[in-house]
Length: 589
Image 1 (tube, helix red, strand yellow):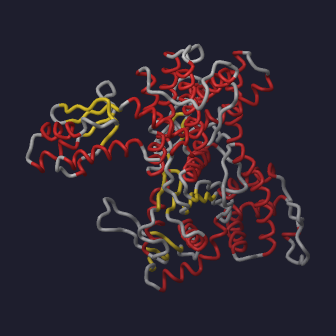
Image 2 (tube, rainbow, N blue to C red; image 1 turned 90 degrees about the horizontal axis):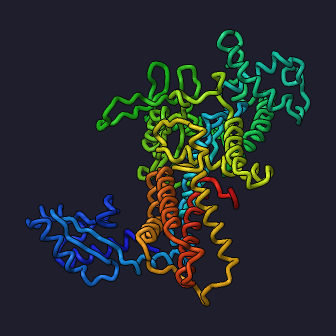
């Protein structure tokens, strides 16, 4: 089903061509002055320079050609040469009815099954998820869901940090705590235990203790570096410990990501890239793409058109160690072999921007990724507290993600219980659903690159631009539909959306008509906040219509049935959008 903007544009293009003007000038945009018109074409202004005519003369000619169109109720040429458009009520109603009939509400699927890689986890094993992991998970999950909805084959990869110095630190701290373990007995030749020598709680305490010790004890740090080297070169006892770390950590990570309703298709990590790294380094050296600089192996990535100086990408340090860039390039080789994606999307803190510029340029320079394949880095801003600084616990520590979720659930539960309309048990279940919406919407409604303030009271409010407000709108519609089902007075046959009977009703229809366009644009621009803007506007439009219209007490059964169809479409559009955003609506609130 074509986007409504494309249908309007097609009609305007035909009018421009009929007047012997280039169709390229027939660009239509949504009006930013709805009091004057609904859509607008400003092409006559640009065309005037080419055709040596007054803009209003061109606009008037085009308007005359549109005079018989059934698409518009009003078309005007306005000085100095704007073309103002209002859509015909019947045309808009017909579009609503088509949306109700179509799969995915008429959404076009531009994906056609093409594969896109989304790298959006980035958590380190052996450490709990904290608030710093929230944005990559929530933004990435939304982009993965949106791409799937648009017909792409989205492959989401958690890309764990599982192969660096932290492994050596954990191994040596474990040696100091439990030297009797067989992993530290050089003469041991048997099989290693299948049960890990630590719980997730112990593991999460071991790493920060080891990290702190390494900053004060140089000998301990050297031991950890040696252990990391031995692990990365296949030393069996340390490999066995590493497997225990991975098993315990993955179970905990999957549980906590699951609590966020965030899911990955691949649970790979930096370790999976290691088999590709020796060949990668040799290839870059053999082809002269990489060269030595002060003992390190680097690739120059600067281009003449760069507005600022970009340093070379270091592939191998002077001590022979590989870096994150090397690991990321090895991962790209693996992804090209396994998936050959048409696009890459990485979601990380915006402070990693330079890293990804370097990695993407090396990948293209070496021909590992086709020049025309888009490689996108979404660098997100910081979630801050009300003091404007990165969000912390009351005692100044980094808050665990599960504790943040619990705080939000508790706040929503308290709001629900203020009304005392449901049992505590139902309120508890509903609070988890609404709390997740509050958290995700609070994050996604902000432009990804910008910092934002986490405000628990505002995010959990049932009013304003919040997740709970969107859910409350959906629940209100569900309630109306449920009451309508119990009513006896219904028209025979299939009911349809009728032409708008009020300004509020038409405004609601026009918002609904933008569904296809909004989702496609949000994906093209990797901008989830545009979906939030849309459903907030749609919810406001519905609530204005609801307050102006006595739906359930309407005497005309055909009109009533038409309104029921219309608000059913509102519910379907809102439900589709929040599913893409990564949450759902309860039955009651």
